[in-house]
Image (cartoon, rainbow, N blue to C red; front, top):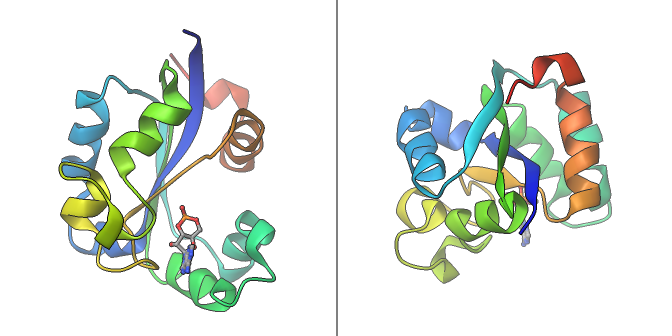
Length: 140
Ligand code: CMP
C-alpha cells in the first residue's frame, strides 16, 4: 500500500455547527494524519474555481453559494491509501445512502450540505492540494 495525500474540506454547514473537532477525530481515528490545515472563508469566485468540474451540473450555483457562505477548514490528509480511506470515512455523497459510522451519516444535513469534501483520485488530489497549499505549508 502506498502513502498518499488527499485534500479534505470541512464545509460551512459543519463549521457553523461547531463540528470541526468531531470530524477531525473521525479522520484521525481512520488512520489519517493532518499534515496541513487552515480555516478560510472562500469568495464565490474561489468556490466556483474549485468546483469548476461541476460547472454544467444543475446544483453548481447552489454549491458555490453554500461553499462561500461561511468559513471552511481545508486540510491535507496523509496516510496509507489516504484518498480511498478518506472517502470511506466520509461516506456516500448523499447522507441518506451513507454507511453507519461515517461522517456524512452522522453529521450531514443533505446531499448539498454534506459536511465534508474529499478528493476522488490521485490526480484530483494533486490539483486540489495545490489549489489551497504551497509545498512549504505541508509538514508531515
Ligand atoms: P462534494 O464531494 O464536495 O462534491 C460536489 C458537491 O456538490 C457534493 O459534495 C455536494 O455537496 C454537492 N451536490 C449538490 N447536489 C448534488 C448532487 N445531486 N449530486 C452530487 N453532488 C451534489
